[in-house]
Image (cartoon, rainbow, N blue to C red; front, side, top):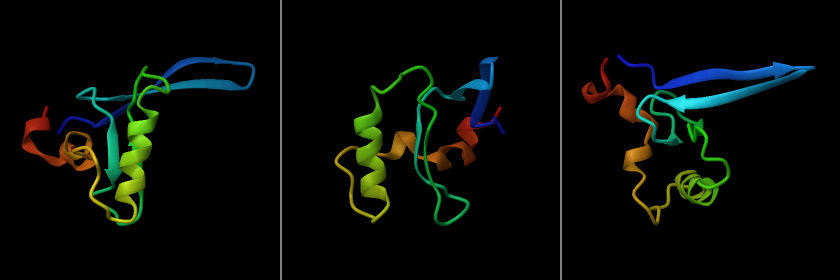
Length: 88
């Protein structure tokens, strides 16, 4: 199975560590963890900066109390890495 998240160290210096989160299919992972009740993911934005923050915040704000989100969260579901289409 392909690894869903690669953490890449992009720089380091005087006590600082710069980390870039990459997801194997280049879509963010946003939503509840399918393996463990409780945790929610909001990662894998790669180099997008703060651009996806409003949509990410909206999805997480709806997911935590179980509300139906305004946008389809399916493409961003962390559980998508458990499917055969993401096999290496």
